[in-house]
Image (cartoon, rainbow, N blue to C red; front, side, top):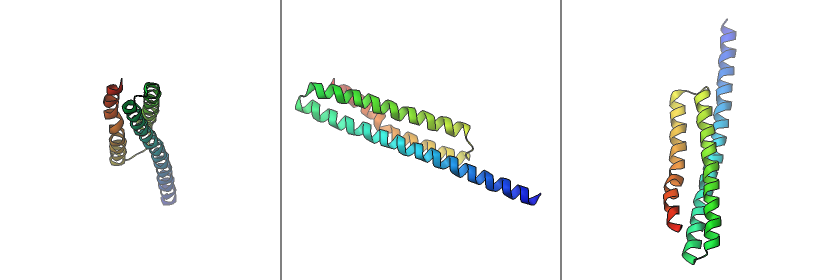
Length: 116
């Protein structure tokens, strides 16, 4: 009986660590998309200042594309956390990290309207 409990516990720990790693890998992808969005906003503002309207529109399109991709990854992480086997404290920490990382793109969206 004791051996079965230890084996099940080991399996549970192994499974939860593997899932945690998958979630953190998704988070890295999300953070990269957020960074890409910020980069496109900077490029967009530079083009706007220089009066290059065509480039402004191209970068504007890139901002929305990368922001949408970041949001899709964020939704996937949230779904995984909701369905997964995570301790509530760990789940809350990951959610806070994701929302804090997303905050710049949410605020940059408002700044982008200045270039239109």
